[in-house]
Amino acid sequence: MGCNNSTLDRLPAVALCRERCKFVGEALRESYALADAHATHMHSLTTLGPTLCRFFNHFQPQPNPTCYHSSPSPPRLHYEFGNYAPSPPPPPPTSTWDFFNVFENLDKYQVPCSPTQNQAQNKSNFDSHNHNEATEPTTHAMEEIQILFQKASDSGNPISEMLHIGRLRYLPNIAVNPVPCKMMHVFTPSKHLNCMESSRKYQGVHIDKGRSYDENLCSTLNKLCMWEKKLYVEVKDGEKLRVLHEKKCRQLKRMNKKDADAHKIDSLEALIGILATKIKISLQVVDKISSTIRKLMEEDLWPQINRFILSTRFFGMWKEMLECYKSQYKEISEAISVDASSFSSKPSNSHLDELIKLKSEVQNWNLSFSDWIYAQKAHVKALNGWLVRCLPYEPEELLDDGTPPFSPATIGAPPVFVICNKWSRAMDILSEKPVTEALNGFMLNANELLEKHVSDLQQKLTLDKELEKKVKILETEERNMHKVVQARETMIPICRENNNVVHHSDLADIMGLLSGLKHVFDAMERFAASITRVYEVLCQQMEEE
Image (tube, rainbow, N blue to C red; front, side, top):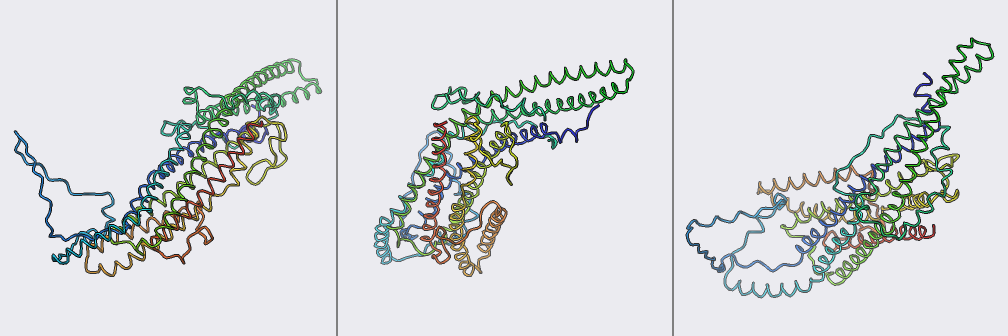
């Protein structure tokens, strides 16, 4: 009875509701993706600091090993009464990275020396101790950098609470068939453009902690998803009734012209009356659902965007991160200026596993940072896409990305529409490319250092089958890492040589890695300054609204 789904799908109101369902659902999914990316990136910050410390501490000049035949310390005696069972021997040292320590056997080998050599050895140890004191600035810098990484990670805790990271999620099935309503004036806030003026009172007002704990952005978007789906179903059913009502009205008009049977005309008029009643009820339901959506928007969504995202969460986090990266850049710059000649040109055999660990951590930092920024952009873009489609204004055309070429501020839209639109546009302009390029430059230096040293070692280990086997394992890990990088080339810009990247002309040594790290912190500081400025401007505009 009436029209089929394909006809309904092309109706403007149904199409609009379908678009609203799609964008609010995407905003919810992106909020979950943001939660995952945020947790991953914050974790990468906590693990990168210790890895940097271990790596660069390994390359500090160490004292020469003492003679293997020197008098060992006397063993400690443990007396136990009543139990004469000897203590079990300590377990052999193990490490999750032991299979990377290709050169452990070489490092443990010690050359016998005579008493005369032992005296010379003591003098060498004394000189080495003084040299270690000279390289202390780098050790201190790495310790400070580790602390700053942890501080940067801790600055993201408020975002984690807001997104309820680690909690069970529920994603409603909001997928609908592609559907394109004359009833648009019912569910768009045309007569409620000023209904959210009172929401300004939320600015700067403390929100009850119990409520903010249970009612976060994800839960609000979840509710909006369910109500938008109900609105879509109700509007589609209402449009079906309207189309059928119009069809029966045309039929009644033709029957009256033909002087059809009175009984048939009465029956048709009764049916038209029933349809009109159902349409009226449907309009009331649509209006009630729309009111519920508007209430969620003004009482939950806008305060959360206002306070939890802009005013105290994202803005505060990026301010702290900016200070951390600024301090890290200062620390590494001072260390390079003091310790410029303190490191050897290449690592010792026992330290290559630390280099591989560092490469893995930096690669993880690179990928997690890219995912994190992308998730932030995608989330606000989807949220703005939904809000734009809640406006009563119908733009004449859309841009290539589906965004209307107008600003909600020009039609007097409430603050939530204006701020989210500006937020989305500002995030689209930001580019994390300099950061990823700097990180890729650091990776190039690490690759050159590792490949050069492994190549030298392969020539020395031809007679040792066991060590050859371990070197092959190392090469396999390298190939796996390259596969990860190649798989992400579409997401992360390929490194280009520019002023912010460590060039191939730099020596592939430890100082080259320090210089690369300096460029990374410089790029991170610049990016953090840019995005902090974005949130600062948004907060100023929110105060003006």
